[in-house]
Image (cartoon, rainbow, N blue to C red; front, side, top):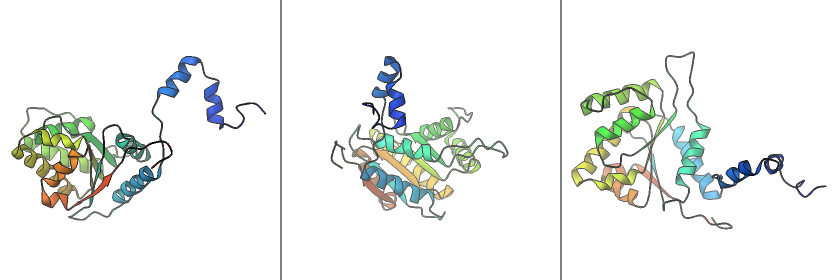
Length: 215
């Protein structure tokens, strides 16, 4: 028995890599499936399977910067990847994740969605045209969940700008009958609470800072 026999085969293989490759692996992000993270993944799965209806439930995942929110979302996206669907008319994108624009704007929100779908568009097009294009494309690729990261960016703008963007988010959810997932810092709670009707639809899931040996 060698000193590495107690390790998994994957770990043993990693030990045999050249120094530069081992350093790259050590520096990379690692998934830590602690209980709270697993609970949130389960909640996301439940939302994805939720039957379509006019008033869909939503999730707000919030917490301090750098505490693993994005890693959880990436883990969920990896479980539900896009399918090229070569036999169909379009790719299938069950879960679409976008980042809220740094300045709150309905037009920029649609731009972010169109960019994520690799769809051609004209930035100067009227917002109503972009809205129609977004709805048509999301239906076409059979999207069943929309994730908006950095949703606290909405607070950067004026009260009117915040209201316009949140109304656009609500409209997408109503029209497509899909759950929305907002991801951000504690400020994200304020962004959602700005619209009482929208706030009532969001289940809030706080992700506390994780430390070794604690949850």
